[in-house]
Image 1 (cartoon, rainbow, N blue to C red):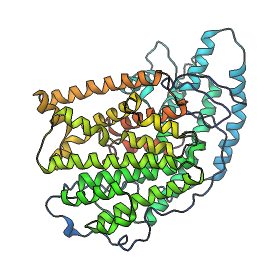
Image 2: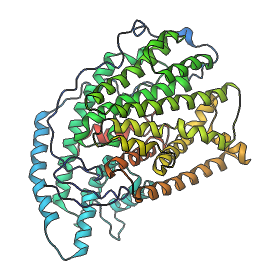
Image 3: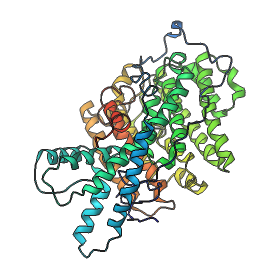
Image 4: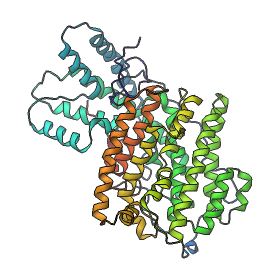
Length: 501
């Protein structure tokens, strides 16, 4: 039996006690699922070129070399000990406490304030009281840095659980049963995620991607973190696995255009992407492009095989179409740099809204969701879809602020420079203008989430979560390039460190 508190996408107030498909609460109230070992699949097939690493003589002029930092995780998630008895213990406690929480929701009360406090505890596990004790001061500081509606559910859950535990004054809004329930459930889902990530890292390591494509960032852990940021619920474990692999193709493609490929090579590569056919691989001029191309096709083909069995091949078709547009946008930006052309900011944004990869990311996220029918994809790609446009804009603006300085040094066209050119302002003024545009974009996101949509909340919230993810990746620094700066802490909270019970 499901007990629901229905609300908007923005409000994160959908609460579902007995089913695992509610996207919104910052901590999950879910039925435990049996862990299964992921089927082995190859990121790259055994093509004749796939085992040959790049050599030093590839560092010719014309390559915008980035010299990305290596993977910071090593074999950590491969060797992470997994205690099945701890998972069973957490799952048992969740089942017991779930009934108590359900009774709380079902209990009739005439006190509206009591109901509001209960719902607030369910959604946030936070206390809103007029005092400035150290825990509450930290609560305010975090809220000012990242308002609740912009926060990732798993990080918000971890944060509010900690705040609630530090509330030693026994505030009446604190619900110890819910707190205990949330802690067990957080740890239970973390154990599941660790097992899934271990399987994914094993596949990645078997393909030896880091040594075969040293120009690209090896970020499979960060890709998995991004996937569970979009949907952490165990019922979407398969979707998460598919999405993490597809995200790795976005990182690989981005790095090929921005950090290694020459302009001439990328002409061939862009043409091959438009054809999306393994039969054209021998037309690519270099070995590394063949490896990149084969990797992209194999990962999409693997997802397509799964979707075809379910009668959902359209999900891959829409995604590949947006991927082709992404490659075209990347190439336009490289052509600007190749010709030393600085477009106006308006011209830049026409292309950069696509190269932000926001739309293709949402398309990828919906592939493994059975709820995402063809109507959902048709709605998503409509040119007047405000939610989709806002995801693209938020992604582009945050990305530019974090990456433009490094990219400009490599001869790439940067959004802030385009803004300076069009409006005749200083770099600092351009940065301030970007920050103002980000705030406007979030207001547009709020508006888009509050309006009626032809798709369910559990579809629309994935787009919102991708915007939230962008904030975590790029607000402080370029998290994908330098995860050791700040992203590492977020990943550790969600995937490594359990909450003390």
